[in-house]
Length: 366
Ligand code: ADP
Ligand code: MG
Image (cartoon, rainbow, N blue to C red; front, side, top):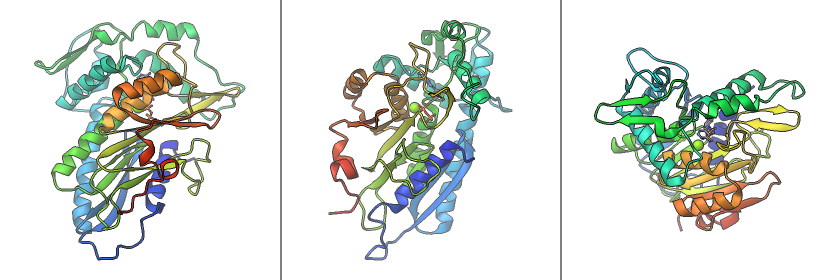
């Protein structure tokens, strides 16, 4: 069975390729369109679609993107350590023992996440590692199992783990380049934000090197830069997966498409990693108050300038009931589409004009 994230990426690629405005340019453009993909970083497929003067130039950019993704994926890994570098896993192993010297990219990600945590009023808590580990272990044990035998973790275990999730005990010392988790048993889990943060960082770096007309899609995190260099379109159309569609069907229609340049589109959904207990779908986005998977939405898409922020936001808004979720999005300036369990869809007013179906937007130059 294909990995769900792989399916999502394939679908996004199909959608980008199939959406209107893909006909050959009237005038021969100076650059050509190229696509490639790689697997093995952040547990997902990363796809690159972009315009370059020739194949060799494109491949050079793609190689640089992949190398940087590989490096960042090692830095932000919470399960494994790697020779020659201290990463999130090293920090966790040293909880309650000693501060750990880490690369600048780790300090940057942690400060970014702590700052957004305080601005957005909690909800996406990178110190929730102990609780998330329990859910992760249950997911690994029961994914694909008979729903009649699959189990939920005991609430007493979750409650005990929640005692070790105090984010104020994550001490980042910029001068010493260290991170310290003050209590033994604490653990960072940056799964809600690292993929988006890394995608934005890599995007900005490669853009500065001269690759400008492209999108990168990393497992539901898409960043679009300059418009497609085809003389026809002034925005990139990014498909939003329908959470009710068959994920194995590449022909399944998108729920909508959002038209973007210099913006990020990030989707979190309950269909990406899950198992069933009876008829209850147990997925990977956990409400820090109930300590259970949040059931308010099937999926939620955030559009904003920064992919790290959009990734943080998608998790954060997912665990809040609609009124609160909408109010927080308005306060933070996040454009959002919510898809409810009954199939209803809600969209913020500022996202509507960028939507193909609901807002009549098009990628084609007027
Ligand atoms: P995806 O990883 O599928 O793109 P998300 O961006 O929503 O989806 O991140 C989900 C991941 O974030 C989970 O696998 C888990 O590691 C972590 N996570 C889940 N709930 C929370 C939460 N409330 N706060 C912080 N991290 C969370
Ligand atoms: Mg997220």
